[in-house]
Image 1 (tube, rainbow, N blue to C red):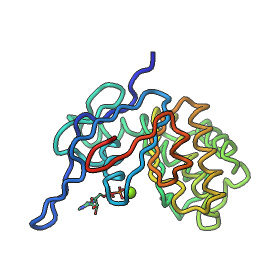
Image 2 (spheres, rainbow, N blue to C red):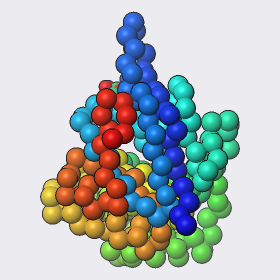
Image 3 (tube, helix red, strand yellow):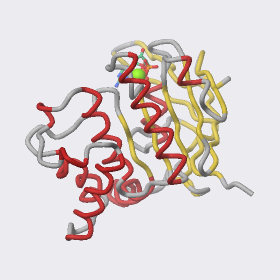
Length: 225
Ligand SMILES: Nc1ncnc2c1ncn2[C@@H]1O[C@H](COP(=O)(O)OP(=O)(O)O)[C@@H](O)[C@H]1O
Ligand SMILES: [Mg+2]
């Protein structure tokens, strides 16, 4: 029987700007099982990134709650949450967010540093193996600005997976890539999550990528359909 990896329970979230109140998420129920691949589509500005931020515990909902492995994260303090997040989930962004001053290998190791670990030789070997898995085994010493967009996203995927997370949240991971490169990056992300048993929540505008999911969902008017 599969268990729930991550869930949003009756989540609502609005943003106040000056006088106005923008209700972005009205009532979101979403439950993603261990190892499951779920895609979320929706118009620009409908709240997809907001939903991923709430799922990641980066933003708090106004009402409702998020649970990880069946436990609510609502009452956790900032530090406890950050530590837990480091071991539980990986995030892949549209614009990669690599640290420009350090090489590929050190970028991959960042996730493990953030998860609170001291970096030893075993970690370095694992990070190299992860770069091998994404086809960049020979690029360990290369700086982000010398890599192509597709290569940068592959480094970001290796970074996200290094901590062996239960869940990957991917926010339009191929949005900045040309079609061929985007398809390759998507193949890789899907294949690695499948191999490692990692649940994947993919926000995408690409219908061909969305249909690959076990479940294809849409966010509109503040809830999931
Ligand atoms: N920090 C914020 N303050 C005010 N409004 C915000 C903030 N973040 C997002 N929004 C607004 O909330 C809506 C949803 O944004 P977002 O979640 O980024 O949408 P999507 O990822 O689906 O394009 C947009 O109208 C956006 O302008
Ligand atoms: Mg977005």
